[in-house]
Image (tube, rainbow, N blue to C red):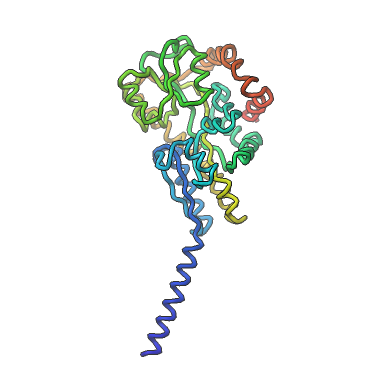
Length: 332
């Protein structure tokens, strides 16, 4: 009996040591983003976590923090830069706070449709942009498709840029957006996303610039009844990792991360289309006038931007060479 008990205790101790050792080997990453879980961004982050756990056999775990739980997009990107946060998904517009050349993604009508979006995402130009983030102490892992940013307003259908004149339009704090709206004759107003609903409700602004995902999940369409869908801005989100975290991973772990990021990037494109189509249908059902522009109608806006906006940004902010490379990346 004593021998049996002794054997059992030895086995229990060994098992405990093995469990502790396994637990110690599990690498946990904290991953933050600013949007709700049921958005392309949220589902992209969740998919990344699932794939990384699968590929690593449970040796790597990701804690996902949606809805700005660990900071704004800019704060999370800064956290990755400083090594206080492992990963984040954030807009290229906020990356422009660290490197002005990222403003290239805030220029409207550069990308014509989703085919061009995906061409650009998988181009050498995109890879170079991600690699360049190393200068900011950030590892670029991939681009995420959150959809085109469009204008939702409470006044009327926007047929030409002159229809925006004098309107107060909320936008993110990004030079490209601010300059664009001014060029179109509107008054840009910066605010947090969480404030837009009440600003539209009380008339502090006449409209807002957001992806459809944000318009729907924040119910912005309840207070503004005219949505223009003309592929205005395509400002992608970027999946990034702290370079401190990246360098702490071994080669095998880094490969798992890259593979999971690639799968999550492609997945974001799939769910964006699926979710966006449903959201637009529901927005229409609520009584919003949704205007889809013909190529000829959209060209009016493009011609206006080329004459009145682009000269303000190219080549003073974005070099002509960089601009040409970006446009070419979408055409392959």
